[in-house]
Amino acid sequence: MKTNVLGRFIADESGQGITEYGAILAFVAVLIVVVAGFCTGPLKTALSECYSNIVFALNQLNAAVS
Image 1: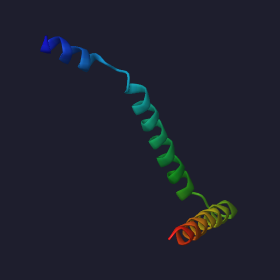
Image 2 (image 1 turned 45 degrees about the horizontal axis):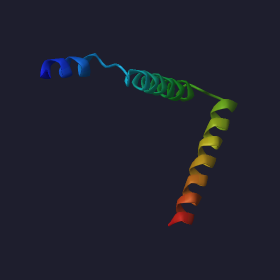
Image 3 (image 1 turned 180 degrees about the vertical axis):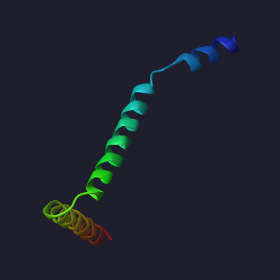
Image 4 (image 1 turned 60 degrees about the vertical axis):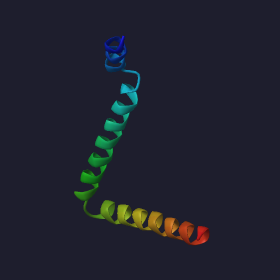
């Protein structure tokens, strides 16, 4: 009886899809960070300004909540 339950638990792959999506999302995030690190010129300036605006907005939100 217990071996049957354990066997079904090991064979169950119902949560596998969400794990694969998480791994793909993590890979894409790392890829974006690496590509952004190699950017130069106007693209680097635009990305830096965008990140600064996001950080500023998050700080403002944090101050409003506190």
